Length: 94
Image (cartoon, rainbow, N blue to C red):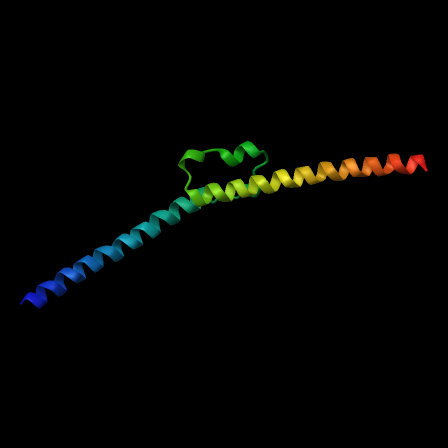
């Protein structure tokens, strides 16, 4: 009798735990699909930070990483242009 009660309670708790996991995965997937917009198509950097307060931590890190990548690419392009100009100036001096 006691064993039956213990098994019943443990199965009920296990079922509630699994239901909670499924519900958490389902709601997390919905927020990820909303937050996981195609950020590479966002033209300006300000678009990356729209709705920042409502985003999960992983999405914030992803957007910051994309912003960092864009800034480094822009910096590299500026440096390349400057080096080309310096090389042309140096070649004129020869």
